[in-house]
Image (cartoon, rainbow, N blue to C red; front, side, top):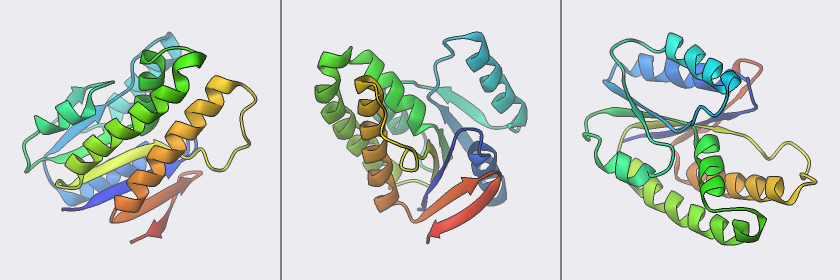
Length: 176
């Protein structure tokens, strides 16, 4: 079993690269999508991702409960989880405003540990956004998002067999 993390900035080409890795492995793929299409622009981004995907890939949309979704996926299937970024955002939003954010981060880290334990038993490629290259956000909620995503990214990277960073469409292997 291999766990691969693909990270990079917004519009860096990380999802396309992760999809290429899946195709190269030649396994049956379940695309686990975490994004909730909240507006027209996000719907257009999702449509763009859908156009790139092979027709034989099964798509499972689960914006919140990843451990439950992963538990229901047959062990022989390759999992493409896209993305941790949207999942963290969804979980922070679900857990409430600024006052609940610190407690939410603890819950997010706990939940991430649960689904990460399941991913380690599978062939999986996970996509995320790299938050470690930008400055510290000025708004408290955005800082909480950076903290939560950065922590979850580190958890996954530590457990991953391979880590790739995509910069301007160019993949760079940083682990494995």
